[in-house]
Length: 96
Image (cartoon, rainbow, N blue to C red; front, side, top):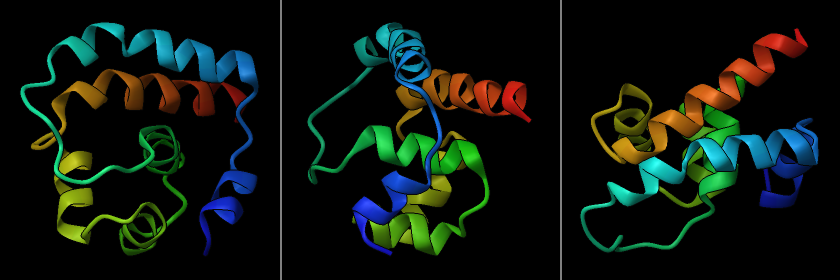
């Protein structure tokens, strides 16, 4: 799956995306150091929140290793993303 395919599968509106982004403002301040690899946080958050894509596919699409994706999902890595992931999950729950 390409990045564009993954983005096309996501169904959040622009307002939902802004709400998720606003939920991350406090989390972004908790970033402890520079990341070694650039990747699309928004795509990662939305794919994790939907929960309908296997971890290996998330890792491949975003460009991370599967173990890091697992650690992010568990909250052991990138802790500043957790409020955004939870906000996105809640948006999906409300749409269901």
